[in-house]
Amino acid sequence: MRMDDELLRRAKAIAAQRDTTLTAILEHALRDWLDRQRRAPRRPRVDLPVSRAGGGLLPGVSLDDSADLLDRMERDGPA
Image (cartoon, rainbow, N blue to C red; front, side, top):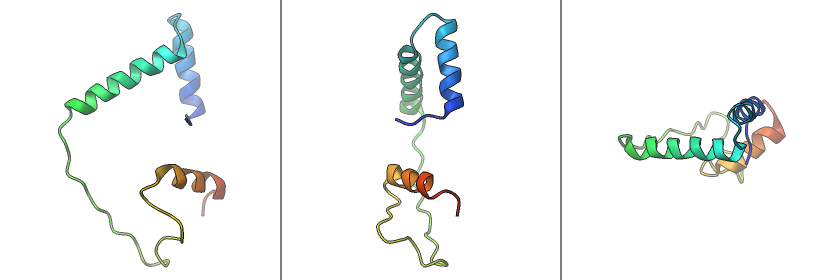
C-alpha cells in the first residue's frame, strides 16, 4: 500500500495524540468511507475517449490497471 508521506505523518500524529494505534485510525477512516460509499447514490459510468493524437496507448498499457499506471508514472516521471 502506498500513502502520501504528509498524510501518513498526520495520521500518526493523531494516533499519538489520542493514545491509539495508526491501524485503529486507518480502520476507522476506512469504515467511515465505506459506509458513505454504500449510502451514496450510484452515478452512471462515464466512458472517456482515448486520444489518438499521439498514437493512442503505448503497447502493454491498460487503463483498467491503475496499479500498473501508477508504477509507470512513478518510474517514468513527467512527460
